Image (cartoon, rainbow, N blue to C red):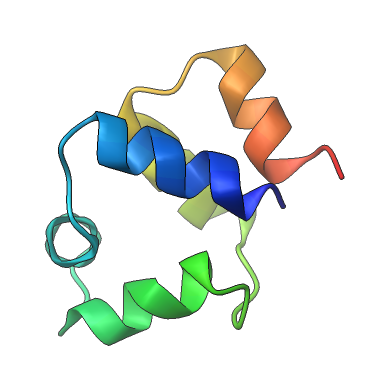
Amino acid sequence: MNLPLLIQIRAETGLTQKDMAQKLNYKNKASYCLIENGKTKVTIDLALKIKNILKLNEDDFNKIFFEN
């Protein structure tokens, strides 16, 4: 995962970690923070939810979740 790109795009959209956690129906931002810190695995389902929230294009989606 390209975590710096994920963080950059999230910040550019004006969303906080807390915003992302709420949109993903997490109880608090700590759960989402684990994603950005690389501490939790991201399933395809979760990746697609993040793609929709951040309105990622296919190129950015692939760069974040599939390229090393």
